[in-house]
Length: 449
Ligand code: ATP
Ligand code: MG
Image (cartoon, rainbow, N blue to C red; front, side):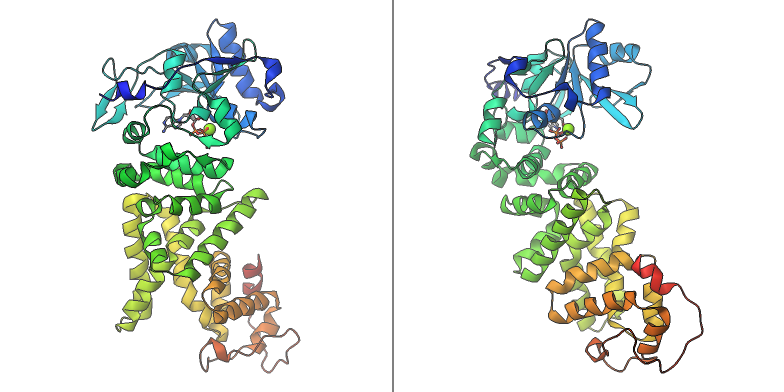
């Protein structure tokens, strides 16, 4: 049905010979080169394609290498012992070298009403039609993602003007934007993510349909949106992705609670989220680990906190209010983005530990320091400095408390808390020990890990 609109995209092949582009085999993974050469030696056409070619031309280091070929998946399988076929919607070969997986895809066809392709409400639900390289180029999303590096002569084949877009630093869809988004609404998120990652602009032709077609994201499988949200927020350009997602009006379709809280004008929440994402980007840049649980805890915090406070002010027990608020927000969120249970458990812990930071009575302090989720909850508390100077003060108190030897901390803490956290005596190392506790504990250490 939509094939005519999509294939309106002009095919104008431009071949850039080896000496006129900057892609060097040095920057292509050994595994990818082996796959390309083996296919080529067996008489098939074999190309590096997609994000890898784009990133290499931009001087970057691709994190994955995809290969496109005219060999069918079964033919690919015959060539590689270390190969498995995957995918139901579209059969792909995965060639495995140690921890590296090279995805080898047979050229896909463009025909909408032949063979094995099915369109439901404008969306592709299954397409197993092999095609030519030209057809394969046309079904890709953005023009910069449809360039092929030819292993037979090291040239780059540009079918739809990707090179020009790279120079202009602009994202254009291939074909009619509305049609392409209807086929696969995730392309809207990919536009935002790639613009953030590459520091490109989204051409107006590609961003204008967001307003009308954004709601189609509600129909996308929540598991796929989870994968996409990790790529957006945990790949080193989370802050920028978040800002662009909000500006583009698409945030509310992925994170409705976050969008609502921000719309209420919660500027403290905005800086908390931005700081959380900036810290995550720094960790990625430093090669440190990052967890989706912390990220989602940050994004959803505003709504959880406001709900819990409302229920508490209506007389609900505080513990119950917090756990109900967490459950409520998580349940709503998982209808959009399927956050796996192992992460939602951690998120709920991070949130429910927040009020416990206000209790600086001796026993409670040591219990909290020994909690397996203390570190994450403490990092979260530090972000909450954006909420009020008092929370900033509390964060510094806990930062300092962790540095102290157990005995020193114990002696500086009251056995019973007199008032709110504002009444806490500042903890000083070398504080006079009024009372010595003999109980051995490693709590102080575990917190500072
Ligand atoms: P990244 O840097 O995140 O890997 P990428 O462009 O390589 O970006 P992938 O998800 O690895 O993204 O996809 C590889 C290629 O497959 C893309 O460059 C594009 O050509 C094509 N592609 C991916 N997703 C879609 C889609 N939803 N619709 C059309 N083509 C797509
Ligand atoms: Mg890729």
